[in-house]
Length: 290
Image 1: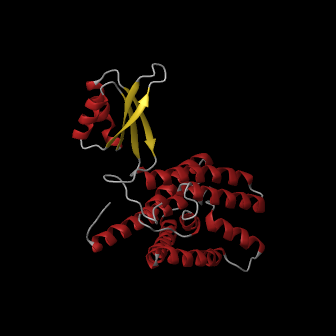
Image 2: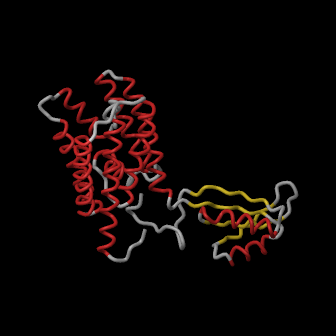
Image 3: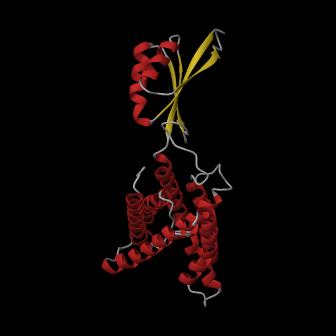
C-alpha cells in the first residue's frame, strides 16, 4: 500500500502494528496459554534457561536475548525498526495482560488450538513484518537471516528456528505432546505468514502455444499486459512455433483465458504460479525486501 503523505503513512503503519499486536495477544491467550502449547521463539529459549538458572526470570531473559538482535537490526535497517518493534513488543505485552485480566479462556482440544492458534499467530506476524516491525525474537532473527539466506521465505525461516526451540523445550521438560502440537501450530503459522507477506505480490505466468500467436499477442497488448514472444519447436511435428509468455495478476486470469480461447479455441495454455514478479506494474526490488 503506497501512501504519499509521511504522516498518513506513519499512522497506517502503527495502526497495522496495533492490529497485529492485538491478534498476537488473542492467539496467545485463547489458544496457546490455556492449552500449554509452546510458541517456540525466545520465550521457549528463556524457559529453558530459567530451568537451569532459576535466578534469571523468563521476561528478563527474553529482553537480554533480544538486545543483540535489535542492535544488528538497527545497523541493517536503521533506528526505525527499533522504534516500531519496541512499540510492537510493548503493545503485544500490554494486550496479553489486559486480555487475560478481562477474560479467562478455557482449554480446548489441543489440535484445534494448534490449527487456529497457528493461523492467528501467522496472521499477526505477517501484518507486523509487512510494515517492517516485529515482536523481536524469532521474527526478528528470521528477518535478519533473510539477508543471508535469500532462497527461504520468511515463514520457513521462522519455522526452522521455532521447531529447533520447541524440540529443545521438549527434551528439557520431557513434554513430547506439547512439542508435537507446537510444531503443528508453527507450521500453520509459517504458511499463514507467507500468505500474508507474499500473497499481495504473487502473480501468475501463462505460456500460450498457438498457431495464432501474433493475433493473441496483439490482443493481450491491447489489454495493457506485458508479453514476450519465445521461439519454440513442436516436439512431435518439428514445426517452428511462437510461445506467448505473459505475467499477470491473479484477478486477470479469467479475462486472459477467455480472450485467448476466443481467438483460438485449440490454444495450449499453461498457467503457473509466480512467487514474485519485479518490474513495471508489479513489485520493485529492495535490499530490505522479504
